[in-house]
Length: 325
Image (tube, rainbow, N blue to C red; front, top):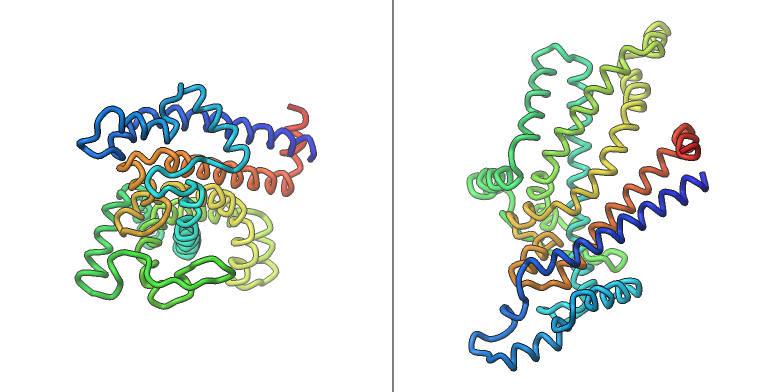
């Protein structure tokens, strides 16, 4: 297990290093921040002063060296727009995005697992085929269109839920959250549901395939022969076995929900990291963009590392194969 852990940590650090290089170099393709920060009538001397103050007058390799050195000390630069550390700007928005992603994950589980199990138990019925056909829509429809349709239905026509924003927040253990107030929950439902529909379709397919496979196993036949009720077979034997691949996939998908909530947050004007990224790109706020991308990479790497370690803990064959490799 120690060899497996060391190798995975080394791979994770290599991924972070490569992505840090790519992210930093790619930022020079989005334009010159001086064009945004300088007034339209500024002369070349004022523009040069702004570039010098921001460190943009130095060679690329020198800027990258300073970026790496500061990043190792937890400093990812200072926002050009807000004039505060970029990490602080990201951390202010991180709770909102985590709240949205976790709520979307709960919706994905609540929608996907029951429907997937139903489709797996009755694969050739109208209900089963209807569920699987509906899951195709979840894969096919773009997030922004789903969000706009939900706003049109629930906010404009029915007037049951707000069309955007986060709503009032309360502090829980020092973390601002909207999930513990009724108005905050109302603001959270539509964006979380929009974010969850694609993942729900994925969970439906995994749960359906797992249920069909489990129902053919010998221990299910023995359970029936012993006279166990259908409910006990489903809730004890079927769900227990299909949850392993579902949890694994959702663990990896949680990272993508955090990273790719950009469209959903933009549609609903939700004040999370995704909307901050769009605003920072429009303003060419390079430190915030770099900080966002680096934190996203780190979140992905940590989640993947945890999933790999859990897999190795559950299945010793993974550790043995890695040690032999």
